[in-house]
Length: 174
Image 1 (cartoon, rainbow, N blue to C red):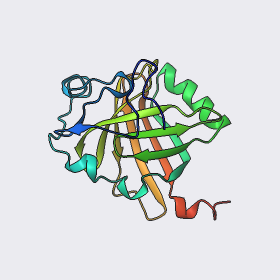
Image 2: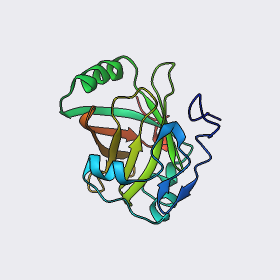
Image 3: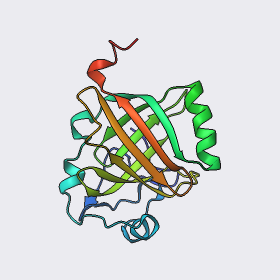
């Protein structure tokens, strides 16, 4: 169980979602979608449909290993991230309204604040993360039964392409 922030009693894994948006203030995320919509130029779906069932639902509570990380639009922050990824290949664990990224001995939590579709999730990072809101988008044409291919974009992190190996294949990877 992860507390969403030092000043909050919100538990990251206990997502309170209303009208398609996480409203419990986890990690000090805005309780309404307007700021994310303005920052990212998107429209959040105002139903819980995609929070309850999206492209990651089948992998909730599974550890997905990063196998590919490409910077498509460079920023100072993703330059640092690229260095960290080279040192420690992160694992990602997703759940309803949240995910955690394990890189080395650190496990920062993130909020899945809302969705624009089955394939796009609005992300809010941990306190002190300079990224603000980000958009995680699956590439359904490139994704296979072995690998999830996604892009992530935010102001600080720029544009990234990542691929995650599915849990059933991690033991066979060399």
